[in-house]
Length: 397
Image (cartoon, rainbow, N blue to C red; front, side, top):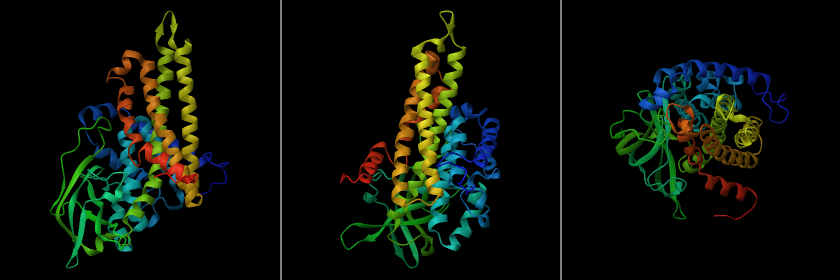
């Protein structure tokens, strides 16, 4: 799907739209009927993750040699899949986004041939998952404040520290976590940050009890601890001391993917609000004939189109090999606008539903809870504004 000639800038091609229908049919049949129960029970549905893998969703950006889609897939296809899965369940949408963007992508981009052969086939097939251990209690947006350390001793990295809010890190099919850690100090006194692959089951590596989160209840998210965890020196991912740069490159793609997840959320809010405004009767007619409701639904339509255009423009730039500076700016703009619009969209949808929107039996309540973290994960709204301002030439700190 790499031929962008039919996209008229960033319109989706016919192949992308056909792929959208395939993923939507899967999401409607395999995820939508169960999403409320998974949310209520805080259940991570491994069987559905495997079905997503069988459909090829984890291999959309991977070469055929690892079981991926090769030339038949691209980053835009991944965004389409995330949007459609997120339209019915944000938890499964973030599972896919993190599995590819934070699990597969670092190994695919920075891994050695041996690392790729060892880990990617199962990750691409969806039979295993990987997490990306970056955030710590005192180091989130400020990744340079990382406290986790990795010391090289007798051909092994010895890792000590802790991570938090790590997606896909403690499920029964999690095979590894890539961990950012201090591996030394630079000449200017700044920490040297590198990335280490830590396989699940390594002694001293513990995925603590899953979080009791506000939303994304069916997503697998854990704090991690590392106590004298020993892995081979060959588990260094990429160049030593380049972990921070690798993390930034990983997040550029992830911001667009999170924007796609937000688009799915807005689409769901529009569909639910439109249906309810047509069905709900008050004062002798549907509430949708009242301007107070109709105008809110109209606002959802505007937010949806704008968010989708920004997201797929950025995805097209990624696939088309746009200059990195331009792509980074487009990614930050898409992430900021789409995620903040998604939070607004869930508030509007809840208001359209009135008292029913406050009841957990209606999906709008779940989407309302799920949306807030979109403004936080993979770079907060504040970070996006800082990046955009810098892209405009302002010396903002």
